[in-house]
Image (tube, rainbow over all chains, first blue to last red; front, top):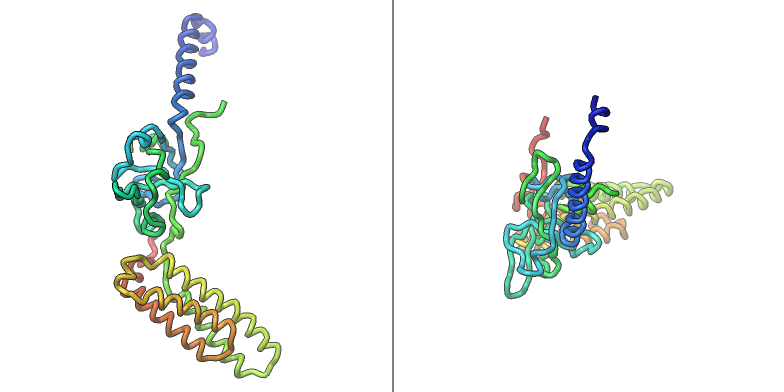
Amino acid sequence: MSTERGRHRPLSSFLVRGAALGAGVAAVSFARRWLDVVEVQGGSMAPTLLPGEWLLVERRTYPRRPPRVGEIVLAADPRDPTRELIKRVAALDGETGLVSLAGDAPDASTDSRSFGALPVTSIRWRVIGRYYPLPRLGRL
Amino acid sequence: MRNPLRPTRRVHAHCDIPCGVYDPEQARIEAESCYKIIEKYNASSDELLRTRCIAVKEERAELTKHHIDVLWHDYFKPEHLEKYPDLHETCWKASKAASKVKQTTDIAAAKELLTLIDKIDEMWKATGGPEKTRLQAVAA
């Protein structure tokens, strides 16, 4: 029975597991400074991103270089700064430092077509990939 | 400890009106109500009815104005303005005409409002509104 087997596991196994778990927790909490996980709400990025999906995002890239066209980013909503938008970079003007954002579903997206281009400084987070739901796991 | 895989916040793949359905008919129906109410008001000597007419007309005219405004700032896009340079002027006049209908029991004001809504309707049709913003058939 499984409860019997568990009782006879050698001590070293617990130590190894404990060390691995500890290292994992330390790595995650260290990485948490620049990694985060967010949930998608709304359908303007369909079919790429669907409502309810969970994404891994990071903020180490954009202090070093500007966003590139095609990347999916988080930006403060210019009309409601308490809200964060998720959109794709449609254009970047190197001279003015203005970025145009667009949804992947143009018919169901409020984006730079209505609120205009945003200053590049309003974009801090880059979307790395999706980890939930598992069948849709992958880089973005 | 909280599950580190659980998203910390929601990001918005935002759309003002996810349904993307627009039709000047909505404004037109409310404006027609105003027209008919003014007719009834002028034809009646029943004070109770006349008072109700005024109250309902106020409400319908306000709805007309709302629907005109939604078309103006949500449906119409910069490329539509290029095609119809009097787009802003027409929508502005229509909103003002709706306010006028609120104030008066003059049937001419209601006629003017209907004429302006029909102009907006022409622009909506010419920019592909019926195909792009209305359901063509309800999916089973």
